Image (tube, rainbow, N blue to C red; front, top):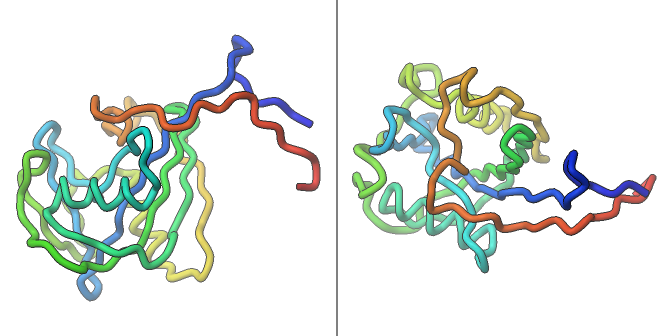
Length: 175
């Protein structure tokens, strides 16, 4: 058995975030943030008491004005340098009106081969993974730091909260 803890021996704490991959044909929806000059997939961190689905619905509405339904888990992304796990979901629109919001300057669809130069690099990878159309989710480590790729990650939003206080979870061999 292995206990998970940080280098000080304290239980590890992780943030959980969700991002939405919303396609219109072959084009993917991106939001241009107001706080930084980056285009990103709609999404962000879970708040205490939310389910993953509730967090995704809230974040998409806050950033795009749209209501969505989850179709498929595309990927699970570990960001160990940020102590964050991001779940990326393919979604389809069920309501709402696409618009700029308090969090976004603009929302627009782009062909995957013509994304804006200032699209967050980790989000580019999630789009590429969605285009694989795999039946099962990909599992990837996204190890670059904010300094390396210029990214302000999901967890950098001051409104995000720790959702999972991991009190020494135990993993058994073979299980």
